[in-house]
Length: 216
Image 1 (cartoon, rainbow, N blue to C red):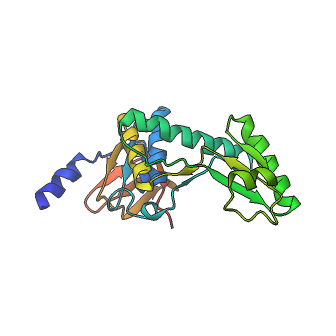
Image 2 (tube, helix red, strand yellow):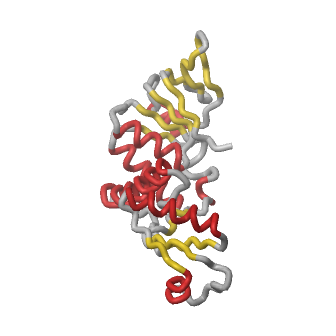
Image 3 (cartoon, one colour):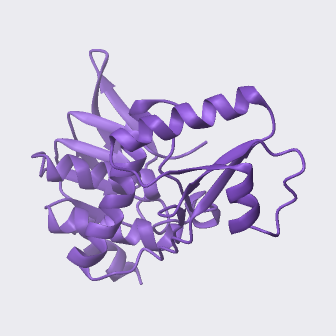
């Protein structure tokens, strides 16, 4: 056991450009995108194993609609990315895209939904604006007594948080990033007011940047 730990520690580099701390969905996504866009010298450190923090019990909802154009664009990109990476790394993200319906029971909410739907359509998101009659016809289980209208997004649904994280981790490795589990960071070291390195139990890694993706 001790021999395995020593071998593992020897594999961790002495220096790198970026250290990402936290092996959840955010950390793995950051590692992937940094490596994809050119920063190949990326090391991700996870204290236990990937998804062992808050990621593993996330709801995993995948929605393309957002309150602003920027958020909608990011969410659309995210769903497209999951689909692309599933094929690239041959690993399932557990996508179950059964669609999602949002309804309005007052004029303010109805105006907001129509605005969001119009914005989403600019980014080629499949959004259907439904009046009360169409909702009643397509979703008869819903009590539409106080419903004014709604929007239906066929491409929305849910994903497996663990599956998504592993897809991103595999893709990050393909792009050149390194991922080390069972590697808790004990301290972030600074020099002249700037990040200089991070300290593990028996190892120090020099770096230029640290990305904290450790949740709360």
